[in-house]
Image 1 (cartoon, rainbow, N blue to C red):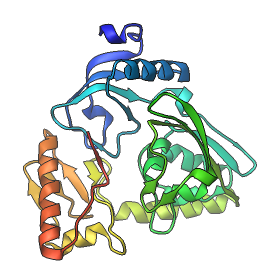
Image 2 (tube, rainbow, N blue to C red; image 1 turned 135 degrees about the vertical axis):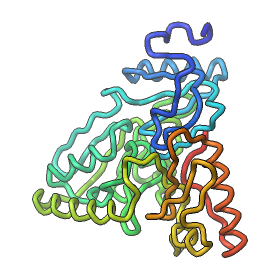
Image 3 (cartoon, rainbow, N blue to C red; image 1 turned 90 degrees about the vertical axis):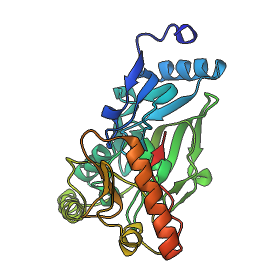
Length: 292
């Protein structure tokens, strides 16, 4: 650890990553860091840059599949309070990139700020949500985003205003190393009505998805004008399995992993689904999950 000397208080070696991801799979991080302040994060990023050490940012782990071989370099877990603060004034909310998206949604609803309630039930951190512009068919997080403070891969801290932000279906121009903070301009509405709307959306969404107790992940992006789940069903793949990984019987765009599973099983199942949908329907599916 000589090249990372001085960071021992926030750094661990050979940390298993499976407990930090929704799929509960994968090997170890060569180094695993949990900085407690922006200064610590900035210093660590600078040291990694100087020594050409690979660095990745891990939020809530809902959209990550870690390979069985593990991850070289440093994995930074943004779990500290310094990266997850949520504040609000009038119709504006300011949120740390490490905050849970669910916490942002529930806070906005409680404070009578409308717009983000449509994101209820979507897992992950705010930073991860912004990176891939999560949402539903008609609503996404990008439409409410006015500013973002980011850390680039060179370690610079920059503010990106609405005029330079670009959002599209499951796409965001926010591809910097870290999304430190974001600001949302929402609409004021009666809190009780928002709570009712959120609860209804939550019930409908959960009725269509696998149990949250399963090790699971939504795998593919929806191609333009069609749902990936529908394509997978049309290809006859509902319930298909590769060893411990299987397509959910309840929602065909979810992969469920049995206890004792391996990332290799998920990767092989992904390849199977993509090849079968391509051959039978002529559509090339793209993964939405990040594979490390």
